[in-house]
Structures are given as C-alpha cells and as structure tokens.
Length: 229
Image 1 (cartoon, rainbow, N blue to C red):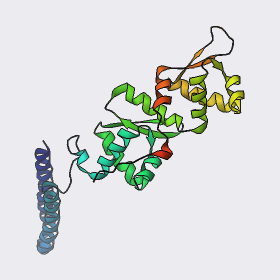
Image 2: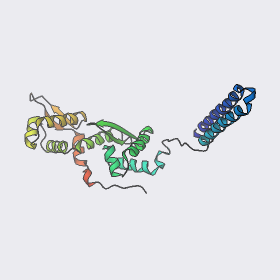
Image 3: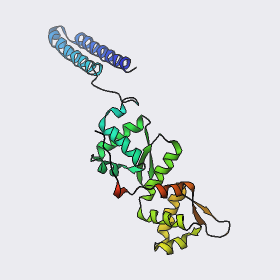
Image 4: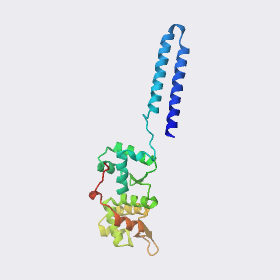
C-alpha cells in the first residue's frame, strides 16, 4: 500500500513537471524560445527531483506497524506502560527530551491508536490504549493522586469512608474549598461516590477504582525508569 502511494505521488509530480515544461515552452515567444525552454526544463527537473525524493523513501509514513521502530517512541510507549497518566512535561523531563520533541512523538503514537490523552486539571495526560477502560481509569486516577492534597484526601477516605466535606477538611487541616475542588475531580474520575440518603450533605466513599488507585499509586519521586537501548 505504501509503495503504491509513493508511485502515485511520483507520477503526479512527473506530470506536473511535464505540464509546466510544455506550458512554459508554448508561452515563450519565437525570439525567446531558448529562455522559455530553459525555465521549463528547470521546473521539470525540480518536479522530477521531488518525485524521486518521495519514491526513494525520502518521506516515511508512520503506521501502527513501524511507529515503535523509533527508539524515542519505544521509550515513550514503555514509560507510559509503567507510569500511565503522566503529563507532557513530566514525560519530557524523565526521558530527557525537549517538550516539543516529546509532543511530536506522542502525537504519532496517538495517531496510530497506541495511546490516548485526556485533559485533567488543565494538563493533558497520556495512557495506553491497550487495557481498555480499566487502564484509562487507573491512568486518570494516577494523574489526580499526584497532587499531594488529593492523595491525602483519598488516603483519608480509604481509611475513614463515609465522611462529609467539612469532616475531611478539619481532619486534614485543608480549606474546605480546596477539598471540594479535589472531590469534584475525584467524583468525575469515578474515584469516589457521594451518598445523601442519611444527610443533607453528601458523604463520600472510595469506589473500587479509588481503592485500587490508592493501593497501586506509584510515587513519582521514586520512579525507576527503564530506557530501551
């Protein structure tokens, strides 16, 4: 399929070059035929050069089959396999890449349906497609729990389920607006659920995803990164 595409591109450029050559020659006056032919020949040669560039493999199309042949993208994929939910600057820092370079390669991985991204708390986080919804949920949970306050709230609810906002705020010494903001993110990410059946104020319980996220949370300060050679 790729060879057929390259042949088609080459033919298009060749035809364009020949058309330019013919048009330039025809438009030239009788007294300026040599100049017209020269310009047309140059344009045709340029078009043929571009066609050769395409046909000889000058541009390599990225596909699901070859996307991981690049060491950088292989490292990115393995990093996200170990640390799902990482954001761009974190990934670039840990793998010693420029953010722009990391973003370009992440985009290729996303275009070939190997990874996905989602905006959480103003930052785009990345995770593997492999593993489905469970992987996605845990990746999002991981990105949320990297905030120290969010992690404290989840740890508290895991050991003291059924507490309302003010109880959490007082126990952790956090402003109730801060707690409310984090609980909202956790609720949207299905880490906690609220129950108002016995109180005017909702009380919060960790979901199964929330308990699993707390148990499997990887402290980003203790990462051991394996770089593909």
